[in-house]
Length: 175
Image (cartoon, rainbow, N blue to C red; front, side):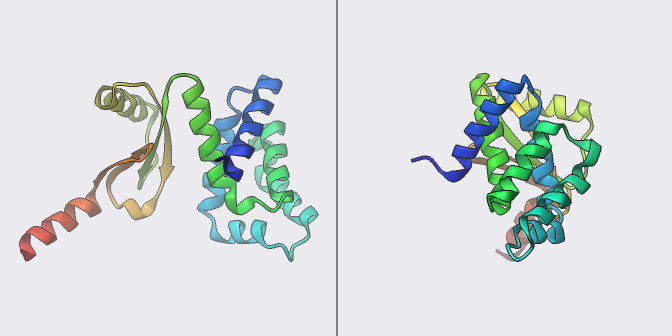
């Protein structure tokens, strides 16, 4: 059964192929993360009482010269279709399908702080060794992680966060 996110993800990949824009899924993913991390922006884009033209203008104002025409057009189309609340799901589905088409898996890594390119490369190598397959690492800065990393590959979650370790210590002391 195909979901709305899958349908839009297929369209994203078709546009990326037609435009020769290999980084389009990465751009869409970054935009989705930025929208999801800003509650006011996410609420405004999802607010159907705000005219669609105004919501599209907000996308143009926010992305400006920071995203390609194709990425801005895609996000604008998603907002116009009333699907801005699903932008993250669409971006994850597109990134996952793009990874799968290259024989890789998508690894979404949540960290309290941005990771350097070297850290991402080392993490990708570790995940490749642990899973036996190549991975596309997408880093999401999430202050709720506190410290360490939480990695999701498909249905598998590897929680190496400080929060989890503290909770384990608390549970061990309590029992």
